[in-house]
Image 1: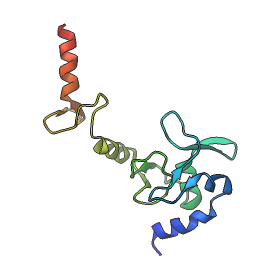
Image 2: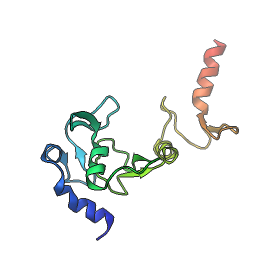
Image 3: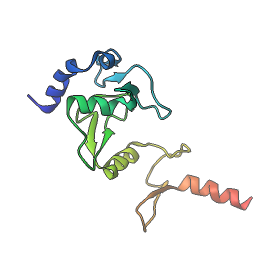
Length: 141
């Protein structure tokens, strides 16, 4: 049995208070109850409000390894399925890299194309040329 199959089988072991709020019909296990301001599934568990993907991971897989955090590889913040293609442990740097790699546009809606992306040589950080043009135009007016 693979890790993914074992986790899927173990879903039946979730507390009813959580299991009743998770829709497991699709590929993602979607949290159907409350979310926080950032859109992440959250619930009260043992007296504390926590992100549900972390609680489910801890219950079905174990503690998140030291120095790692959980990433929504499926890019769905309501997904709580601890599966390599959905929620998995990685470094903060890898989580951030994956997040930006999935983003199709900058925060102002300009596409992340090769022609519209500038990489700052000192840091490797990407910047949107469209936003930079708009910022410069605003300074000139």
